[in-house]
Image (cartoon, rainbow, N blue to C red):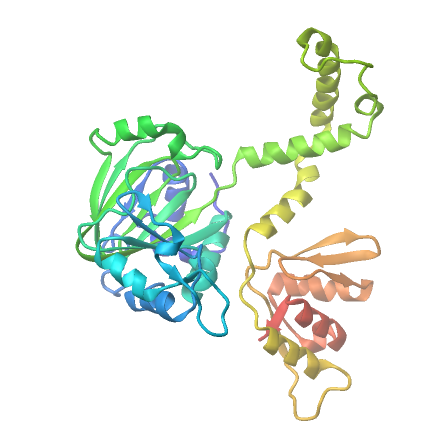
Amino acid sequence: MSVRQGGHPALERLLSVPVDEFATRCWGREPLLSTAAERGAAGRGDTFLDLLSPAAVDELVSQRGLRTPFLRVARGGTTYADRQFTDGGGVGAAIADQVSDDKLLHLFAEGATLVLQGLHRSWPAVTAFSQQLAEDLGHPVQANAYVTPPQSTGFSDHYDVHDVFVLQVSGEKRWRIHAPVHPLPHRDEPWTDHKAAVEAAATTPPVIEATLRPGDCLYLPRGYLHAATALGGVSTHLTLGVHAWTGRHLADELVAQAVRRAATGRALREPLPLAVDLGDADELRPHVEQVRDELVETLRTMSGADLAAALARTVRRTQRAAPVGPLAQTEAARALADDAVPGHDAPIALALRAHLQARLVTAENGLRLVSRAAPVDLSDAEVDAVRRLLAERVADVGSLGRDLARRLLLAGVVVPG
């Protein structure tokens, strides 16, 4: 298995083995526990507190106006109803589901676990790290945090339908890992579909039983059973969920495109016979065979290139580009206008916005720059400058031209450098 070149800073930070070894031995196959000492993190104090600290958790739930579903609360495998930890927003905020720090205090003191969901969208340090990890892996990443009181278990044994990296931030947590009862589950195959098998497997000796301490990282492929109990103090861990692309994604898109292409032919346009009985297998058989033959023949003619454009659109929708400031972008673009207000300095250097997934595609009237930002149509004279921008990731206004630079700023493609 080959790994893309160019460095993997986020992934390398999490591992005690080289990326190539992780890719061939562990990815989608087996767990990997990387302690702080094995990661070489102990000497530099890398306990992941820069990503999410206990103080950050307090700030999120008490000062940031957090709403559901960005928070869940659970205890002993049972999830609390939203009304048990939310309240109205007060005067000027007609919101009924804002997190109540007073209710949380009571529930947490009684042993409930706080689950901060979607941290890749709500906490800047986690946003930046998740985006870099997604780029390193080539697969979408989400982030949740689990804050558990002493001697408490938030969720009973279960499996996830995505891979996870568990980053222990503070406190200690005892983890029990069991082999899958349903290997490599799809997104629509939750652990509750195999509840009895999960409960039975949880009573057998675990394949891993270990206490995670600050700076430790545990990788679990999807399907591995796990449960964790906080020890001796409040435990906070960050879970980075990796929604791996699989052959199922390729198959779904391949079949969808084959159906659309085959449907342009007469065989799939002809009506079925009058008074057809779709519940009669014998009556339906010749029609099924005809449609199947058309689809099989269409599938044989399709290539990876046929899927690339559609899959690129899917990839762009799964993550967001790096955050961009609407006010700063608008001001920078205004300073580039021909009638710019005196005293407003125009940016000289521009940088390609990070995690943009930008590429040039053929459009009706020429080439178009598509990305996770707004599309930009290009004239023939502008194409070479944009190609250089995509290759070098930086450009100056002089090489782009003021008009193109302004349009790229307003589209969110570049940011002042």
